[in-house]
Length: 531
Image 1: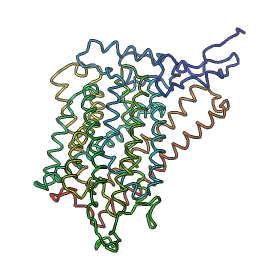
Image 2 (image 1 turned 120 degrees about the vertical axis):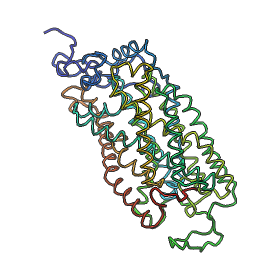
Image 3 (image 1 turned 180 degrees about the vertical axis):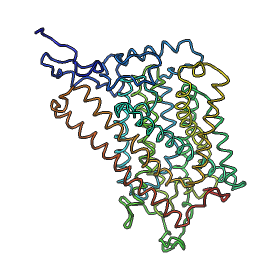
Image 4 (image 1 turned 45 degrees about the horizontal axis):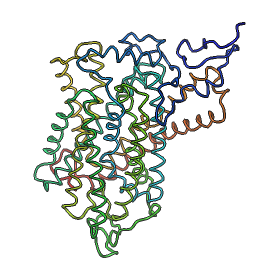
């Protein structure tokens, strides 16, 4: 028998990064190192590991071949796009960082003070760091998967690949993908109408403001590449930071928050709750806090961090995907600092009695409220635009893959792009009118969609990749570290299942409670929803 190493025959050509000993067992050093990219800054030389499956049939338009590794496919993509009028593999890591900052440094930050008022300051801050760490880790798993399979264009392709190429898996993921993005677009229409009502003192019917917001967002969605959107993303993230910073400063310098009552024994005539006196800040949840309310607050925090659904789409347009962790680490560190500080400061000066979501409504000075809220205009528009672009890209590519309309400036191409965007915004408008409340809409999206796109998918992806790296005996040959990582990813899957079950229940129940309590203005109504 010849000595040395040979390629493992068991993986049918997909496991290009792992070698086997003469007895057919995987080489120990390859099991430990293969696919474990440097997640702190990327590495352009370290192997990324083998594929978990061949290229999906609908992604084989460039004749990649099932045995091509990631580097070969990436090189072919860039080479074949070189002469196109519209090129997609053009994003640098700073541009990708701008997109991430615009996605995460967003309006939902202003739900953190409310979440802390429900959960208590200490549990709220702990959960902020915990969710950030889990999302950072799973985002690195997404990145590694995309390096191994650079032909994937979005999370729908990954969903199909994770479930052994089943067509139904692609369709199921696609439905959740489009619904998630449309819900987010709807959220931004809702809050844009809320802003216009606030700034104009309800000068028009709320439906009219929602229509205005929808048309503006549709127009801003028209650019077709993420590279073209990167500058707008930087602009959006910067002004969002200014907005939340001003909100925190104004909360601190005001004499008292909105709806303040000097009498500490004042009782709200509707809720019958004691809501007077100086702001009350608690380190732990108040006695009597229900599971539904507590879970809703936790889902609000989670929603703001969880954005892995867009990462495959962003990575698919990077010229050098190995640089993605640089952008990811930058935005994660900023998230923890901004979310924690803004949430804690606003909560400290507003207290449990006077908190609103978003927290701009807790500012008693009308000028302060309008000024800080106004700086949020770019993100009110742009983040919805970003998710609309992700959805339209997904649909457009499926229709025009392999045609000149995808890569050239044609009337059919641009008309179709504009029409697809219009359909997504019409759907978003309907959602904004049917579910017209901020906190519960955040929670419902988090439980229905983030359960899969934030947790379950990536725990499964990790297990599938480690199975490829280790061969048929991967589970038996794991080190202590390997078993610890396996346990972590099983735990991540269980978190996702908890979100899907308990999270959906609490979100729906909270919506029902809001209607019963009369806290909702109604659907398709002219009534003001201003702060």
